Image (cartoon, rainbow, N blue to C red):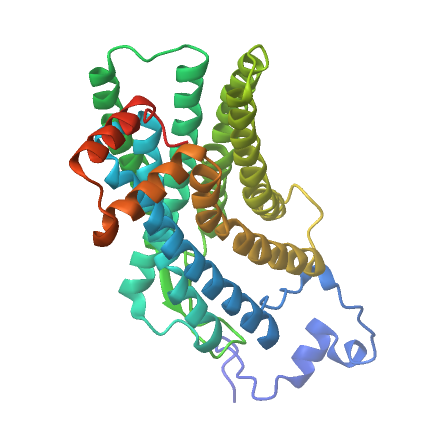
Length: 362
């Protein structure tokens, strides 16, 4: 006898499953796969692309280090005659040197993966991000100083100007470090489908998109759009003022200004446009698909490499294009040769000539 109040124990669930879920009929149904619900494969570069990018990074490194060191030595050689723009240029040289020193790490990681550990990943990422901001901010400082000198004729009270210049430099470095703090979220980790470690951002899964979009918006606004607006305004007003003057000096100044803006736009515009598109994709403001994501990821990687060229172009733009820099450079070379040292009278005359027109290296 079975107890009617005691629940019946079911040992075979096949009949129950067939009734509740209709398994028998479901086996005969055909399903259509919705590709929109599938996760995209992780974007990876081919081996030949990694080799090409590694070679590019090595060439940028070999050009940036001696070029920036040469400009820095010329600036230090004429320390007594520095203008505010020269001081900003010197700090820009330091920023570009630090940026160039990170390239061997990234070029190595393209071939063998990130083998330098988690701490170095955070440090190198922090240096890279800090110098991304400081380089652009020092470019803005130079454009503002050119505007103040040429348009506003702010040459009086030089002692106060130099003091303000050094304060501005300290502020720029502090701002650059603060804005780069999200880089502490970078760490060395493996990704699915890749046997090599990478050094990249790694947020918590539930807040990854929010943090990434917030970081991107800060880069777009403070790292490109706002500096670009300030530079265009200052250089536009400066060119308008130069157009009302005459002489060879005006043409030389306009060439330097044109070279500065063209190089800045060519190096940074493609990368920022690519990252803006990626931000729109992540915010679901554009049609998002695996093919679009892979195309944007490839564009970001290539344009970022192009942007790094700016750290080796700057010495050519701000130094070798300027006639006064070439004079300072050859004067430094001449003074460092023991055989060609001048007599006291010639040295005095050379010093007086140097002090007459040594207000700017640009």
